[in-house]
Amino acid sequence: MADPQERFDIILKKLKESGHKITPQRIAIVKILADSQGHPSVENIYEHLKNDFPTMSLATVYRTVLLVKSLGEVLELGFPDGSNRYDANRPYPHPHVICVKCGKVIDPDISGLKDMQKEIAEETGFEILTHRLDFFGICSDCKN
Amino acid sequence: MADPQERFDIILKKLKESGHKITPQRIAIVKILADSQGHPSVENIYEHLKNDFPTMSLATVYRTVLLVKSLGEVLELGFPDGSNRYDANRPYPHPHVICVKCGKVIDPDISGLKDMQKEIAEETGFEILTHRLDFFGICSDCKN
DNA sequence: TATTATTTGAGAATAATTATCAATTAGCAT
DNA sequence: ATGCTAATTGATAATTATTCTCAAATAATA
Image (tube, rainbow over all chains, first blue to last red; front, side, top):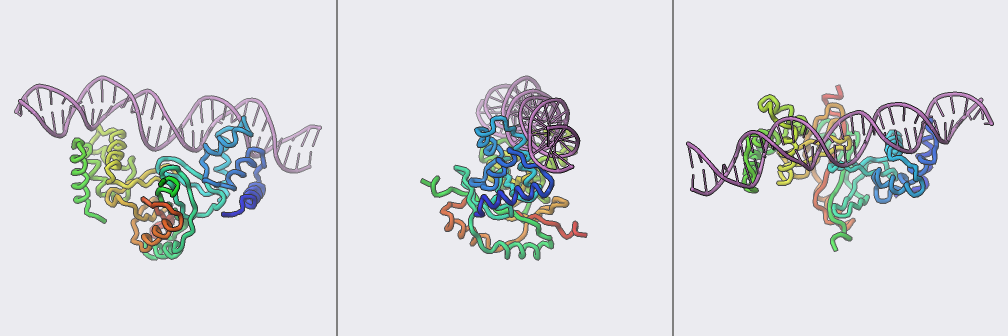
């Protein structure tokens, strides 16, 4: 896991460099994204901020997440049930392990993915740009 | 690729065995799903059937796909952009290679996934039930 | 501090999917 | 073969997540 503070600084710097204004709302949303413990959804972020920002609009959360995504600084995890969760702590493609009971998301260490990507490219003739790898199961907490 | 006719027979049998009626609409939809060449979307299936079934409702396509899914006989591929595509030819989890230009979906042969799953289970303590692996890139046709 | 283009908040618009319900129909019993 | 009954269909309304709209507010600059 990257240092949330470092990720926060990087994303804010990118926002400035790309000519965007730094508003209190953006600071608050990026702070949560830069941490990304638990891989929050837009709704999660919104609920979390309603305490400190009673006037915060859901649209602003959507817009900010979209903006950070356009800068390549957040990874969007869309699921078949329509839910989207975000990870700006590690914005590059990486595997996830998701508990189907409690929704917990873990980032495992894994080996051999690079080889697999090369193998696929050779076999299919594709130029592979990115990938997505999720494992679904039941976490040790939920097994008990 | 499994034999579409065989897949069709299996799915129809499962429908009957689970106490569902065999309607002309279901036969037509299952026929397309059992083939799954190109991994069709609900909209694809609907458009394809409007010729033979001018009265076909989009809701019926959704319902039938959901029903076959509940029998475990179709794999749903949901993407972050909200689109869903279906594969009832191979309804078990398997990797996909998706062209980001033309939307083509290919099923590559791949090795080493089993090992990876075992590695993940040991590392995280999860009981892994299923997985999802997609590679996104540009196909050889679109490169030209 | 004044200026201006950007951003925000609130709610409307949109799009995909699901629910509703009267009319139809598949499959069974006769 | 026919009638019966519960399941299914088609049309459309409801729902839900996300995006759009636009007037009011505000960050960044001089």
